[in-house]
Image (cartoon, rainbow, N blue to C red; front, side, top):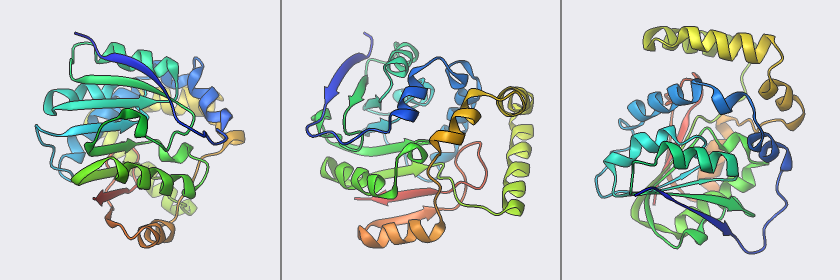
Length: 254
């Protein structure tokens, strides 16, 4: 049995930031990059120290991309719903999870902060390397509030890989720690070849596109203010859970 793919439309969709959505729908750097698979493996190994994964967990992942993380999660949970705005990535995720009967892959059309169309309640929500492509922090607040509506009692929500505003010295330190992690984990060559040579110095499409589309950058004060505004039972996870050093997470308990 293979995962099902469903199209889902939400009512009253907001204006969608077509730039990044169009980028992810085209043939681009990340479509074939091995770094995404490496990042998924690092996150999977690290986040279990922050979130106790349970066999009865019913998981919702938003921004599933190629589905490498979902294929790692599937054997350890009861069910998993994977969402993405990109039809291309929906198909790639379906392919990578084809051996997992407990995985359902859906395309989001319309309001990508609204998950009511899943018609299901969840015990764990994962947003990994995705919130930087939202337009503003208000959309992230909507996303958390909408997740809360379909959360089972005691559910957890983890936003990982949150980019912070950094000064040049902090950015240099983050880059150095990322390099050392690559050295320890054995993917430094791929990081240098794909992340530096192909994407940075060769004018890669992600870097070029990002100059105009921009990504959302946070401050620690903004994250703390978000917790207060929504009255969340939440903590900031200071340790990076991905290959990107200097990017904290936000763990919410419902």
